[in-house]
Length: 233
Image (cartoon, rainbow, N blue to C red):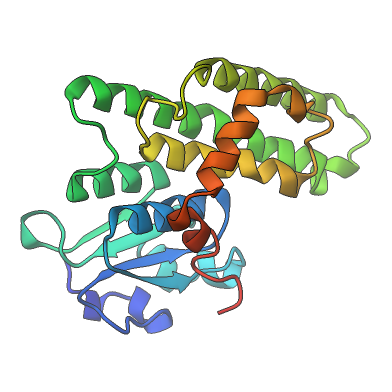
């Protein structure tokens, strides 16, 4: 339990309105999950740009909020039982916000279980594997002479896209109605453009995934939130 005004994070990222939820993030696939959720749920918030540079994510101020030095993280001054809550890990934040708002977590225990199942699919599979694909195809790993790691993640990305494509057959959203699972999954599908991997993955063959990504990014809240917080505030 703490007071937002005395938290170390405010030394580097001061709150203009400490009465609303504070988001510390960057517009990566993991980062925009939270801004999209906040916009979709209508929760008032203030966004702070925390770059991926060590000067930000490894600063004492940010480590005081997230010792794992990863974005996103939040402080909700209006947390459970009226007490402030600091939280990191995008999946945990999505579940918390859905429970707080009563939105995007289904209408029954059955719905909730299915939504969390697909959220975990992204957290444990799709996100980490596509992130590794980006490293080995676009970033430093692409320069390695041994291409076996790169091929391993190409193959795994194809497998996961096939799983997703099959699950989307005949439905608009992954767990039935639009949910936090879609907010977790779709930004990672969108990252394939940035990684330049669409051709090597034969992305055009995943018709359901393509349509799903387009539906998601056509939502007004998604269009607004996909660049929050700004890369260059």
